[in-house]
Image (cartoon, rainbow, N blue to C red; front, top):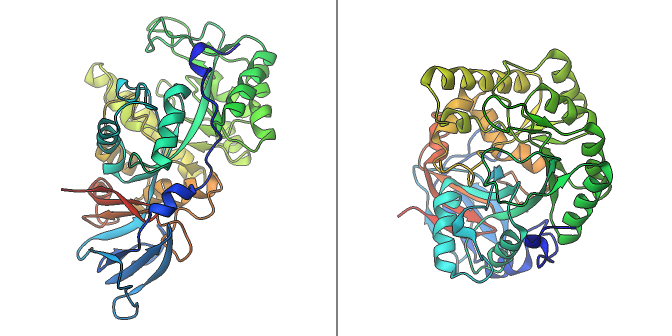
Length: 406
């Protein structure tokens, strides 16, 4: 049986920009900026982007585009425009999100801005929160009551006795001791309207305690249910055994790198590529743990090495920070660490085209005609300095400004 916090959550999933948000979107024009239509493209200087009804209707140069008389025009001179960012690893678990269905909108929106929209995120994957809070929060965002990103939600499944040391001991967690229980949890989440699953294929129990790993048969049972419905499965591996379960069970996305090991083996890299396994590296998570500097340096070197080998092997990298669990909202450090393993264009792809393609969001990830009007206006060129990805002037979802720098 599901724990009490699943009881009232009975909303259907949202896989596209909902009509409520589109109906509220005005005609918006971004004028004068330099545009990267894709991470690989040559920038279009002195550009004009017109959006209407939640979509991009025109992308061209100034003087070649007629600006609608009723449009709101934003002067982007000296700025850079890219597609809206995805954060493929967030959590709506903080106290600020409690009772999100009935709480006042203003504090929720303020926290949404602090945590996500001021950093350019127009689409996020929440990979573990209380559906009683996250489902109503998503509904209110989609209705326009709270300015926020498109939200996808994944339900968690833990192995038996797999209560992580970093979660409160009194928290009831959905654990599976058998394949049948794992499949039942997966069906419950899908019936609630969640968009995917996250399996804890490895659980950290504390210093000097053994990792609790999920049996492959248990993981496979949950994966099968999700895949039958076309839903992705994330996994949290803690060690090499957890990585092997990712491979054997057919998991789609590794939600973390694994800092305790130096790198992926050639065999693992080959299987990741063969099975199209994606990686959300969450590097800054390990740079901020309370530990001696020499230990942190070693762990960070390990995860950067994993990201580098994964990327060079042709793996799909999805930007993610674990924000909501971590309190590090500023994305600058994540970009700096990723740059030690990847190019600026590759990092921009991890925020835009990679997740849009991987999660089959056909109209997201590019600044092109008839694509969703999810856009980020930056104060600087991210290909000149990767930290400019954190210098956000405007975040726009479905043609509506959801964050504006004061």
